[in-house]
Each structure stands twice: as structure tokens, then as C-alpha cells.
Image (cartoon, rainbow, N blue to C red; front, side, top):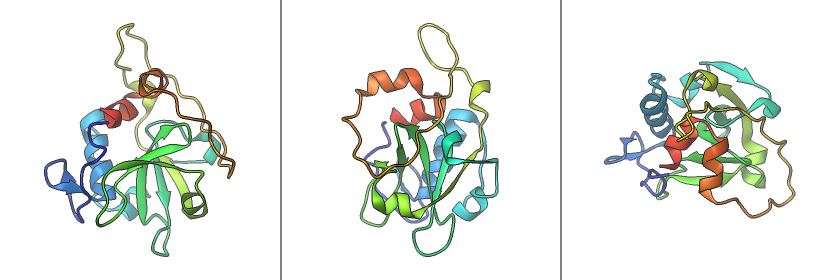
Length: 164
């Protein structure tokens, strides 16, 4: 999760310059999966395969309606109802809980732009990633998060890259 804490910057697309939401997603997906995404969130929302909420897995893009139109904000799902994103001016790249009412009300969909099963899972055992469906969004509080080392075993390479 080396990118967590990187400052938000409108139009930013590198760790040195800072990130906006689409710049962060584009950077991570390109570096971890060699997939080139469009620059804008709206264009990203037309790529890949649309998913039902129960199908969302680590590495999938999650979209939100923040200023009043669909797919105006994007992040990368990392498991346990959490996603990483670059939130807004004055903020930094961070993890969010999708069950928080702000995000749950604004969730507009998810898309798979990388076939995670085709990417090797970085591990000492040489095993590949397995995808587990995302749990349904619920307003109930989540239990304390597992240590990040435990999460690495269940997330795919995109999520692992995002956690560096």
C-alpha cells in the first residue's frame, strides 16, 4: 500500500505529482497488469465487463456518483468491502469502507478490466490468485480488519500492488 497517503491532485497520475481518482486507477492497473485504461472516469466506466455487486472481487474497478452523475468517481476494490481511491482536493490516497452510508448510497457499479485469473499471484508458493465474491453491502459495522499480511493471500496482484 505504498500509494496510500499520496496527495490528491486534480489531473495527477504519478506518485510524484499526486493522483486524482482516475489517475490512480490508471497508474495501478497499467503497472500491475499492463492494461492501458482511458484517462477519465466516465470512459473507464465503459471498459471491461460490468459486474453485479456480488461478483465484485479484488482488483475490480468500483464506481460512484459523487457530484451528481454516474461513474464520476472510481476506485479499486481490495476485498472486505474496502476500496482504495484518491478522494478529493486536500485529501490523500486512502482505503474506504464501501458499507459507510456515503459510499453505499453513491455506488453505481463495478467493472472487471483485468482477468485476474490470468495473472500470476506473487507468492513464495507460486500459486495463482483465486477470486472470492464480494460480500453484499450492508450498513452493519464491520469487524476489525485482518492484518495486511493475511489479506495478501486472498487478493489478486492488482490489490497486492495497491497495498505496496
